[in-house]
Image (cartoon, rainbow, N blue to C red; front, side):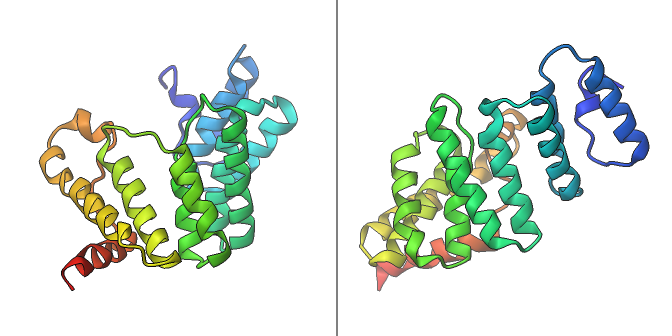
Length: 214
């Protein structure tokens, strides 16, 4: 096992758990970070274990710096488990921690917007839009720019149908098309180019962009 492999397990069982906590016990520093990384690697296949590791971190080596990601992970797990109100609450809590540590950025602003839109939380459309506008920083990464322009276009369109939603949707499509040119470059793919466009929100963004010709 490599120096960092012990806290990047993608599967989990009693043997792996015992080895992980033995290593964690011996580690002199970064315990919370190691737990955070391991929780992330288990989000999809072992969501309950991921939640358990976060609880363990809070009880044994609490560190507010990681709460933004812990709350984001919990939101993603609750959404996967169909606990949508808990997912939304944790997403909003993650934003609060982002504001407390402004130098630490995650993708929680995009996750919150997706949750609000997918669950049709009309009362939170404006909140999600304001957060995206205030917190987003331009990047050279197509996937991030696609998320920003695409999600804001949907929110604006659903709130009041403003024509700026068409402009933003068009920009989102432009950023999405860039992945065709960049996918062959592993470094650029690692830096933020997505492998495929999901059905949603891409289909809704495309529909808004196409409404320009009507």
